Length: 100
Image (cartoon, rainbow, N blue to C red; front, top):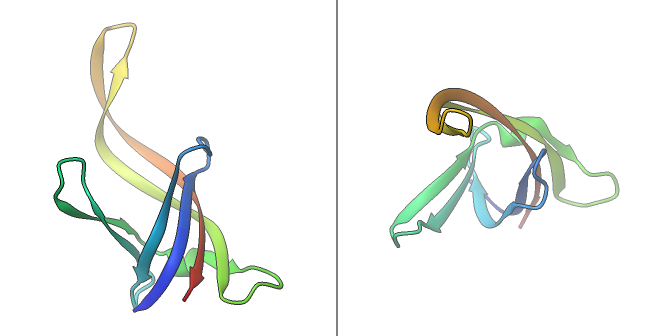
């Protein structure tokens, strides 16, 4: 496992950022431990980060790239019908990390 400093942003909503310390496992998955809104320990998992990120030119131990995550059965609010629709969505993220 490698310890990393990272930043992840949604491609279409670049203002929101997840950043901090995390670990990249032997299979290339980025894992971050955090406290959920109710105070319990939880983990964010981003698979295939190491495979999809490439070294940054003239920067030592820094990498960046894009990953796509697929989420199933996500409730999305429909204003016209004033109800929620359940859909499968895909979200693309821009990833930067530095090994420490």
